[in-house]
Length: 345
Image 1 (cartoon, rainbow, N blue to C red):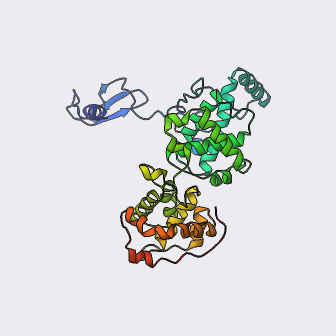
Image 2: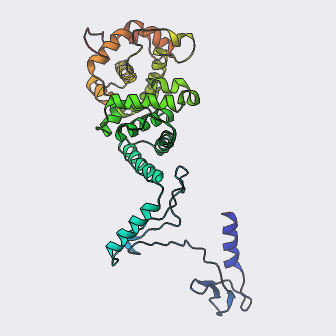
Image 3: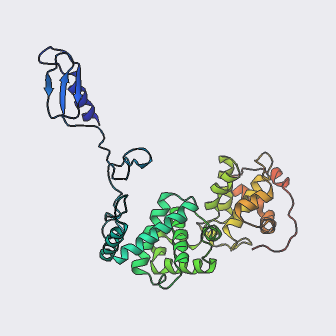
């Protein structure tokens, strides 16, 4: 960029050899640099350095304008890099001829690429509906390509369940944890059991436990949901840090305590995350959030949160001290007492 600026400045700061002035105008049609004062052509065949916008749409202006300088990015997951030509219909063209050309072109395309492009399109729709990052979408496409080439677990399976399991796996890998319920809400035709079964098969057949680490794929830890849940409930950054520390104190991931069984082991990660949010929201001086709002955000029944809260409550002072002591024992005593209830998961 610096060399370009210097060259542009020198071009217009040079002096006319005839009159000695530096007032020039550029004729882009002929490529000439002309002195405004005396009309001498100082330079000829000047390269046009403006953007070379081109479009092959039906209209060159208005809504039909397409200011693209290059085509789409190369997709290394496709055999031709995604650089194939598409024959489209245009105004004034025989539609029968266009259909025949499109049919002939389809016969020459690689069948694998057609299947992959269709699957990538559906993955993009799922990720868009779930408001996932583009990194999740790209990772899901990578996993689908591997599964399509190697895994037997997706053969003769529901395409909707396969794509849902692939997106769920990509979410786990990229650290954007989502629940099976959230995926099923976007792909209702895929049962939860089928998604879970295909997910486990993919992890096993693609050897993802070895390449990514078993902890990342065994089950989502509650702290993965804390930022999203607390952000949706308008809680602060400090409260998120306390919530994450408390979830790690509840379910340590390293050290000898990671293998110690507690009453809340085996509970749903979202249920534990919702319980932690409930605890912090009821501490004195913290952002208060009503239990129904927590249940709606976390997708957990209030009875489930009350049950886990009853199991955690006797150990809460020690857990908070282990999590950094963000609340005093006196603050813990001000928390609502557990309510005896039945149910939960």
